[in-house]
Length: 76
Image (cartoon, rainbow, N blue to C red; front, side, top):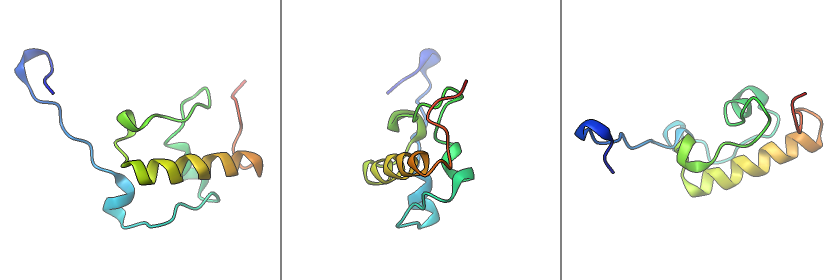
């Protein structure tokens, strides 16, 4: 994986694996907000650098927080 100019792209590391978190809490809204865009879309794995396991847990937690009205579905 190379960029222009011959530099290699830096491999992203899963923030949840580094922190040692096994469960992602849907009530931790400040942490979840880092993984959605200004428009309310969930950022994909290739952008965030999460592993597949934690990306699935993250998506589930964001959706739960939306249903519980802790986070908005869309931004007006």
